[in-house]
Image 1 (cartoon, one colour):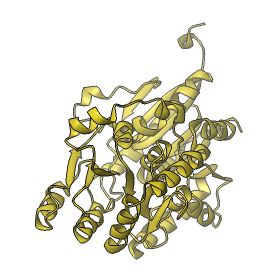
Image 2 (cartoon, helix red, strand yellow):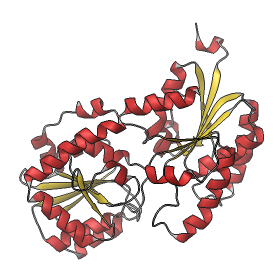
Image 3 (cartoon, one colour):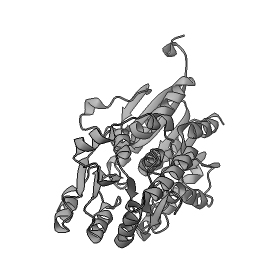
Image 4 (tube, helix red, strand yellow):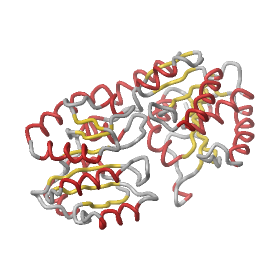
Length: 378
């Protein structure tokens, strides 16, 4: 029978942006809802450069709302008012909120206008208050999240630190779900001619390749790796950075200043990250803050050893001296020593990589789907 002729249950997904969040993390869940008899709605800002490219698979109705990442922006007030109307006009079975601003506005709007039977779910993809976070984050975000938990039927955290902290909050239900899951079989089925791929990106076959993936911003902290390379002065090491962002020119200038510009390759945005992993020897991830990184999981799934910051989320994934090396994100000398330790030992690279390939099975899409389907069906 045609879906349009059936009165379907409705689910609403709320996030700040479409391309960088909904399209990146939630398409499998939208598909799951459609397959389980739901009409799927999405509210988020269209962040595509070409606005007409914003076509969301498995979405029956998309509402473009101008969310702002800064919670104090005036646009968010208009989004809140519009979202209240949307919720009052639809008898949603489930409202699933994501991202800090989307989660806050979504829950406030649902509090005012939801049907009594509506379940409001919020996934915290990494609280802004965390061990080592600036005091302003704690002053601003902690009381807001604790207060909003009173209007949350199910609060989902994706790492252990957030889960333990959220035990002090007051949602009706608290769950730990380790991320959005990755398709391990799909990743492992990607085959690449390493020699040809390296040649294409301008890397010799005898080079040791270190890979980072992430926006060029302060948080992703690529600078510490650049400074580490300058410290160790190992010319056969190439550092590939996949990503773009506001620090592009600053980081390139730093490479020239430190005389490592011939070792650092800025690749910009890439849609072949798995292939890039498979031509690399080491994955390096020096962020100051993470929730639970998909990029890090993908690197582990391809059998790479990891050098990363000793922070929330990363420590859920990487076991120190078993799958990688954990360091203070400010320790450029430590990162340099870790790079040297790995590139000087093929056995260690292999040992860490094999450990990660097994460990990452705990974060597979199938495991996450099983857990999320239980939550959605409650």
